[in-house]
Image (cartoon, rainbow, N blue to C red; front, side, top):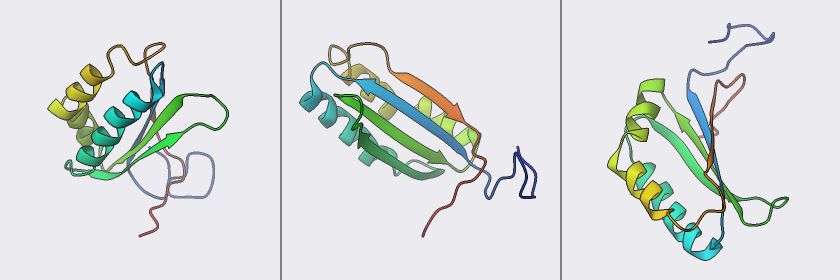
Length: 112
Protein backbone atom coordinates (compact mmCIF):
# COMPACT_ATOMS: atom_id res chain seq x y z
CA UNK A 1 0.00 0.00 0.00
CA UNK A 2 1.20 3.50 -0.75
CA UNK A 3 1.09 6.62 1.36
CA UNK A 4 -1.38 9.50 1.11
CA UNK A 5 1.14 11.98 -0.32
CA UNK A 6 2.25 12.75 -3.85
CA UNK A 7 5.60 10.93 -3.71
CA UNK A 8 6.59 7.47 -4.89
CA UNK A 9 4.04 4.91 -3.77
CA UNK A 10 1.23 7.48 -3.42
CA UNK A 11 -2.20 6.04 -4.25
CA UNK A 12 -5.46 7.77 -5.04
CA UNK A 13 -7.59 4.73 -4.23
CA UNK A 14 -7.23 1.34 -2.61
CA UNK A 15 -7.84 -1.31 -5.22
CA UNK A 16 -6.26 -4.27 -6.95
CA UNK A 17 -5.47 -4.29 -10.65
CA UNK A 18 -4.81 -7.28 -12.90
CA UNK A 19 -3.69 -7.58 -16.50
CA UNK A 20 -4.05 -10.77 -18.52
CA UNK A 21 -2.48 -11.04 -21.99
CA UNK A 22 -3.53 -13.79 -24.42
CA UNK A 23 -1.74 -14.57 -27.70
CA UNK A 24 -4.28 -16.19 -30.02
CA UNK A 25 -3.91 -18.85 -32.68
CA UNK A 26 -7.63 -18.44 -33.44
CA UNK A 27 -8.38 -14.73 -32.80
CA UNK A 28 -12.10 -14.84 -33.64
CA UNK A 29 -12.82 -17.78 -31.35
CA UNK A 30 -10.67 -16.35 -28.55
CA UNK A 31 -12.33 -12.94 -28.79
CA UNK A 32 -15.73 -14.58 -28.31
CA UNK A 33 -14.54 -16.46 -25.19
CA UNK A 34 -12.89 -13.38 -23.68
CA UNK A 35 -15.79 -11.02 -24.50
CA UNK A 36 -18.24 -13.32 -22.72
CA UNK A 37 -15.89 -13.56 -19.72
CA UNK A 38 -15.59 -9.76 -19.49
CA UNK A 39 -19.34 -9.18 -19.63
CA UNK A 40 -20.24 -11.75 -16.97
CA UNK A 41 -17.32 -10.82 -14.72
CA UNK A 42 -18.29 -7.17 -14.54
CA UNK A 43 -21.16 -8.27 -12.30
CA UNK A 44 -18.93 -9.99 -9.75
CA UNK A 45 -18.80 -8.52 -6.23
CA UNK A 46 -16.07 -5.91 -5.87
CA UNK A 47 -15.53 -5.44 -9.61
CA UNK A 48 -14.78 -1.80 -10.43
CA UNK A 49 -14.23 -2.46 -14.14
CA UNK A 50 -12.99 -5.03 -16.64
CA UNK A 51 -12.01 -4.08 -20.19
CA UNK A 52 -10.97 -6.13 -23.21
CA UNK A 53 -8.46 -4.65 -25.66
CA UNK A 54 -6.59 -5.78 -28.77
CA UNK A 55 -2.90 -4.89 -29.02
CA UNK A 56 -1.91 -2.68 -31.94
CA UNK A 57 1.77 -3.64 -31.57
CA UNK A 58 1.46 -7.43 -31.16
CA UNK A 59 -0.81 -9.14 -33.69
CA UNK A 60 -3.48 -11.40 -32.21
CA UNK A 61 -2.74 -10.32 -28.60
CA UNK A 62 -5.79 -9.65 -26.44
CA UNK A 63 -5.38 -7.91 -23.09
CA UNK A 64 -7.88 -7.85 -20.24
CA UNK A 65 -7.54 -5.03 -17.70
CA UNK A 66 -9.28 -5.46 -14.35
CA UNK A 67 -9.90 -3.25 -11.29
CA UNK A 68 -11.11 -4.78 -8.03
CA UNK A 69 -12.17 -3.05 -4.80
CA UNK A 70 -10.11 -5.34 -2.56
CA UNK A 71 -7.55 -8.13 -3.05
CA UNK A 72 -10.11 -10.55 -1.60
CA UNK A 73 -12.59 -9.64 -4.37
CA UNK A 74 -9.97 -10.34 -7.03
CA UNK A 75 -8.98 -13.66 -5.44
CA UNK A 76 -12.61 -14.76 -5.07
CA UNK A 77 -13.12 -13.91 -8.76
CA UNK A 78 -10.07 -15.94 -9.82
CA UNK A 79 -11.54 -18.93 -7.96
CA UNK A 80 -14.96 -18.43 -9.59
CA UNK A 81 -16.77 -20.69 -12.07
CA UNK A 82 -16.66 -17.86 -14.67
CA UNK A 83 -12.85 -17.75 -14.50
CA UNK A 84 -12.65 -21.53 -14.83
CA UNK A 85 -15.07 -21.47 -17.77
CA UNK A 86 -12.96 -18.81 -19.51
CA UNK A 87 -9.76 -20.79 -18.94
CA UNK A 88 -11.39 -23.96 -20.27
CA UNK A 89 -12.75 -22.06 -23.26
CA UNK A 90 -9.22 -20.90 -24.16
CA UNK A 91 -7.98 -24.47 -24.63
CA UNK A 92 -6.60 -24.86 -28.15
CA UNK A 93 -6.96 -21.13 -28.92
CA UNK A 94 -3.67 -19.83 -27.44
CA UNK A 95 -0.13 -19.80 -28.82
CA UNK A 96 1.25 -19.92 -25.25
CA UNK A 97 -0.06 -19.69 -21.69
CA UNK A 98 -1.54 -16.28 -20.82
CA UNK A 99 0.63 -13.73 -19.05
CA UNK A 100 -1.07 -12.63 -15.83
CA UNK A 101 0.20 -9.75 -13.72
CA UNK A 102 -1.15 -8.51 -10.39
CA UNK A 103 -0.57 -4.76 -9.97
CA UNK A 104 -0.49 -2.45 -6.98
CA UNK A 105 -1.64 0.85 -8.51
CA UNK A 106 0.24 4.00 -7.68
CA UNK A 107 -2.33 6.24 -9.32
CA UNK A 108 -5.73 5.04 -10.47
CA UNK A 109 -8.95 6.94 -11.00
CA UNK A 110 -12.48 6.03 -11.97
CA UNK A 111 -14.09 8.68 -14.14
CA UNK A 112 -17.66 8.00 -13.02
